[in-house]
Image 1 (tube, helix red, strand yellow):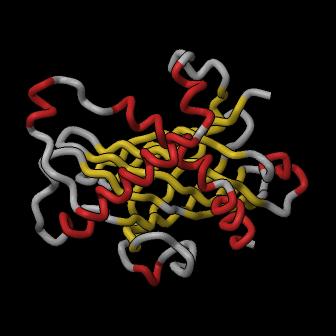
Image 2 (image 1 turned 90 degrees about the horizontal axis):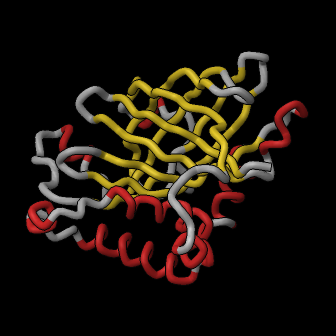
Length: 223
């Protein structure tokens, strides 16, 4: 059931925060860009504070300090390019109950990977996300803006399996890009893919609001 995957994500909330600390690597460093950063909203500030506080407790932070940023210890599970399909919550792939934030939209795309391939359908829920306002004509944030992400969905593999997934993480938007980073948990009743159930994936990608597309790259630790 989707509840099982959701509970798994909740139980590893601290790991989700640790994985999303990679967002710090995307922060602009030029003095000019820093000068143009606008003050975040209250909820965005709370999200940033939560991220920083959790990161201070995470062993991965101290470990990362002495490591390079290469993905030598990770392997790509799959990549997917998603296209927006539905903006109405009635069309959501997963129910809104228990989700963090408001419904942003649903999308689908082709999953491509050596160990996992097929199609994905997903719905995105997000807290303090500027997208709904922008769609109604509001101006995009002029500086950096942090929001929470809580998607869920289904992967239908090319050999007929159904894999449920839930994600928790953060999105960081700027005038140039909208970066996303999440921890992803999987659940399935198909014995061929139950090796995924105890695994936690790390996703990094981008969202293009104008095109209505998103690119996700999901990694697993090398065995």
